[in-house]
Image 1 (tube, helix red, strand yellow):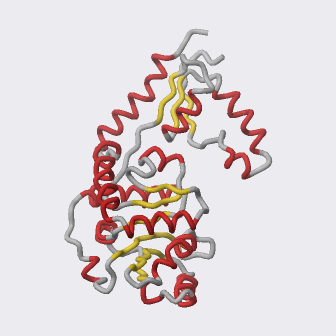
Image 2 (cartoon, rainbow, N blue to C red):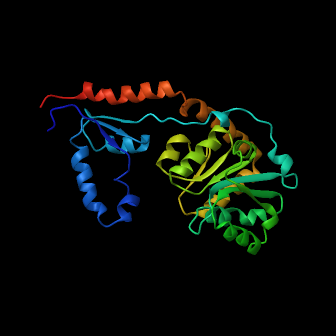
Amino acid sequence: ALKRPWQLHVLTNYFSHEWLEKDKKNKKKLRWAWFIVRRASSIRTTTESLAKAIATQVKESVDVAALPRLFNLAAYRQHHPDTLHEQCRDHHFIVLAEGPYQADSALHDVFAAVHPLLQRGQMALLIRGSGRAKHLFEEKADLLGVRRHVIFADATTDPVPHYQGADVFVEADVDAAGDERFLRAIASTTPVVAYTNEFRADVIVDGESGFLCEAGDSYALGQKVRTLFNDSARRKQFAMRARSVAEEQLHEDVPTYYMALRDTITTALRTATKT
């Protein structure tokens, strides 16, 4: 065993079925991961759910916790006048999505989810994006007959009015960039419908402070958007809960963050045992 105190940082969930299925070699990597994890006296993870999963597989004496997180969301917390609905007066309900214009973009799932609702005429889909394949989405809107209900905004424009003014934010990407957009909506107190991952499940409770769907299920994504479209009381509930989440869980004080990071790392000194 290692004589010096050390702390293991687990930044990827090597223990999920999704990760194992990505590559045949991952089963071998998993054995190595467990070999190391079970020899650590102090472990830090990126999410609370990963920390809980590891804690069930190691000794009770092992110090397992999630790392503190720092977010730059100050601009989204500050209230701004709603200029978005003034710009979109022909639509009573605005769905916001953001992502890259490319062939494999998750924005395709957003289109699949909301285009039946767009055909009703009262709803608009505002897409913030960039990329050479923008024409693919313009053509798709034309083919679906919803072009006049889809607004394309350049990703370089000010995002705050869009995030604060939208009635619902939809996130169909499950990567880190999608998590950042997800947090912008939470900080803006805009109701969220998103594909789930460990990070998002840590931030909101499905059905109480937002809607989470299994990744790839665009039908469920659309059904949740429909629910919020028809239920203004639920939208208000999600907005209120989002405000609480933003205040309690999303920390932006840089000195406090680094102090918390220092403290969680130095616990390895206290948990070290003589060998």
